[in-house]
Amino acid sequence: IRLSDCDLNLDPSVRDSATVQITSSTETTAEIVILTETSSSSGVFEGSINLSPGTPVQDGVLQVSNGDTITVIYNDASPPAIVTDTAVVDGVPPIITDVVAHPFADGTKAVINWKTDELADSVVFYGTSPALGESVSSSEFVTEHRLEITGLIPNTVYYFDVKSTDEVGNS
Image (cartoon, rainbow, N blue to C red; front, side, top):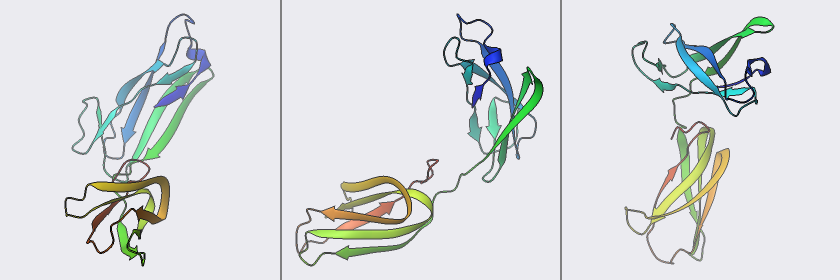
């Protein structure tokens, strides 16, 4: 959680704090989060709260479900206003489909293609046994994935697996 409010910089020689309330569609009674100024005199405050699935409890952890809206509420003193911001919980990994290996004719390379239903990075694990052991990757977030494996030994059986992780870390 990041808040910018220069009016809260009460003492330029110390790091001040600010308080926000946070709720979710699952936990509708607010949890309180204390934000700390990132450096003295910055007017920028940061803090966090852990998220967890489950039954709502006032425990310093915000209970959420996939698709919940999280709402942060801040009471700004100057000018007087209630400021809110929202985010949606994404707890679902990308769905991987259409995985295809295209070996090169000389047997030294292969291209692995697959699709995901949301933007995600790309990793291919491969090796000459089911234990795999090698990998190639791309950190670019795409839905049409293509990675090339090089340095393969011709006339050798290779095993592979693919993995994609979305922008919020679901894989």
